Length: 428
Image (cartoon, rainbow, N blue to C red; front, side, top):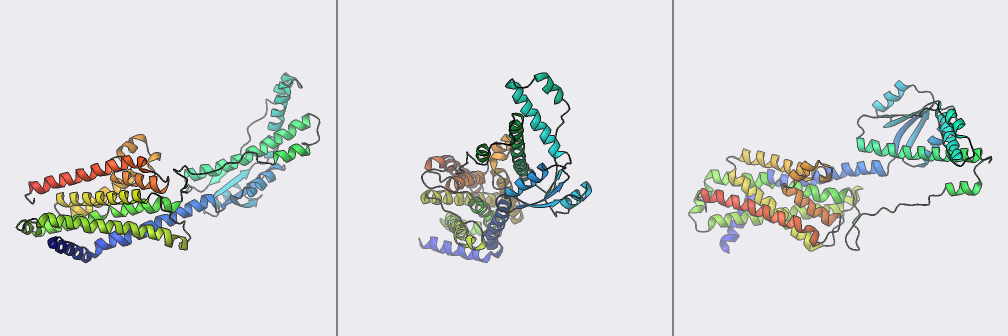
């Protein structure tokens, strides 16, 4: 026991002397989690809360262009600047200069085309009811052409964001067209306007959508930028211990420390286990600090608060296994690398690759199927799957089975090959 204490103190002093390693293990995760969360939270607010700057050039010679503008303004999603004089080149210039993210050019025949289309649909419906002659209606509607709006956007706008904006605009357009079609139908039936009681019903939204995240149990975990980013990037940073731990092992091996330890009974294994215990404590300290910052500091910075899962025991188990997986991988790299540069370079690049294919940077489900299959070899994939099950789904033990099995297999595999290498070099 005394030998273990001495070995632990030695490893702690060695760790404290590694200023760069400490910087990577504590300061880097803090900055990484903070920056990524701020960036993604800003993007989330841009889509869901902030109004998007929109330029509308209305050339319409009727009243439906103004109706379109009014309805887009009522949607609450856009901050609209209306102009009737700008030319096409001026519109492009404003979007390219980022004065406006998006712009719409309403053509001069916008109202005319919608009226023609409404009349066409009304005539077709009345023909179906036997009120009008079908041949006359067919001949009358042959010359009607499509009605188009020109939509300009800043090229930096991501496709998913642009598609969501277009979807909102299309919803407004469909509402205008449907109302005009119904109005035309009543006109053709001899009414001066749509009856008031029907007009009133048209203004109601009879079907509402209740948006709720799927969750286990009675507690609902509402996803936000903190729930996604704090666990994910904390894990990513934790695995970067490979630079410190792997480099220390290479340094001790090259300096002859391993050889000297062979002369002392059980000293070598005590040294290895001391490293495991110290770095396990460091890893769990990293996670604890990151989670506390997410819970207590983020709200004061205008960021969403990190909500902890209800299954705390499962969180502890997944955290310990994730930390142990990172330690085992670092030991493996340290034992096989020939120089400190090799350990640091290969270790860092491999962690970045594991993060990229494992779903840390972008969700795994949006990747091609073959990339999803490749990503399953990444330990970070299973670590983050376990955390997402807890932080986003309030998951229970049965949903963590895959994570637990894989992490145990990964730890065993790393330690097995580490043992083989050390045995081959007669260190143990």
